[in-house]
Amino acid sequence: MAERSAGRAGRGNPRLRSLLIVGLLVAGAGCASVPADKRDARDPWEAANRPLFAVAEGVDRGLVRPLARGYRAVVPRPVRAGVSNFFSNLADIDAAVNALLQGKPRAALQDVGRVFINTTLGLGGLLDPATPSGLESSEEDLGQTLAVWGVGAGPYLYLPVLGPVTLRDTPRIATQLAIPSVLFDDSARPYAVPLQILSGRADALDLTDARDASALDRYAFTREAYLQRRRFDIDDGAPPAASDEFDDLLDEFDDELDDEPDAPESPR
Image (cartoon, rainbow, N blue to C red; front, side, top):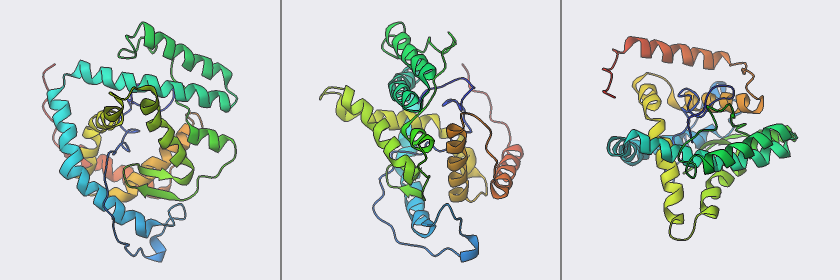
């Protein structure tokens, strides 16, 4: 979950990282009724997704977000960047495989080059010398591969622990979380995925704080932002055509941010 340059939707792009609300343990939820005229065809299970989202948000505010704030307050920025770079280096292995599966050998070779440079010159992936050298990650993943192969997105889901996904994307998240577990030994394995989740959640704090301070329908915004991001990824960076509803949500979000006073700049 590293910081990337533009080109593809860089993982360091705060707007596109708004959906990294992860590490949520949901203990069951009931169903809520959704008026028929408000239902989204992409989200046929909204009546079940909304209560799951509400419980997950509660756990995030009560547990995950304070942990992420503590992590950001205690751990120096260079160390946090190193953790983020390390997991991004592992993600580039997955990107190389999926670029090859999509018939993009040049992108696959570039990802392999990134892994080699960042693992050697970058001290095991803690640094990212590949990006300033001009080697950008393809950021391909299994969900994009399945889309290229013609698999439909399927229903939108909000899942315990995993957060927002589509049915097509569930294997992607499983494989990405599995990579650290497979590569680490028994002593490090129990800490790998929690640290990966905590690092990603800390990176997303600023945007989710701004989102929560607004009067948005957070569930709808999260769904639309996720679906737009995935469309952007699958189309290799081509701007997706946003729905009118999402345009309205973004306008409202921007208005809320404009109305808030500027925060004092923290010392560097």
